[in-house]
Length: 71
Image (cartoon, rainbow, N blue to C red; front, top):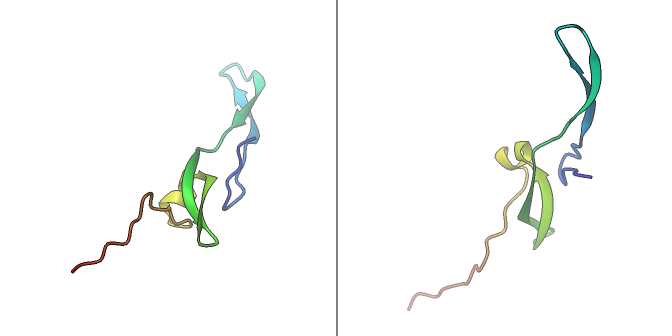
């Protein structure tokens, strides 16, 4: 089951309603992306919804961040 690591957003139930007012069950799924983010100062793979990514609620971890010294 897809669930946002930050806000806890997950699927919601709803209904398709046709022009003839026929009703069938459906699911609304959030846009969940697996990203490498900093959690407690350490990089970790987490599932985050795009709303939390876009609003900056999570900091993405930089891959291969080597400290370069200028001489």
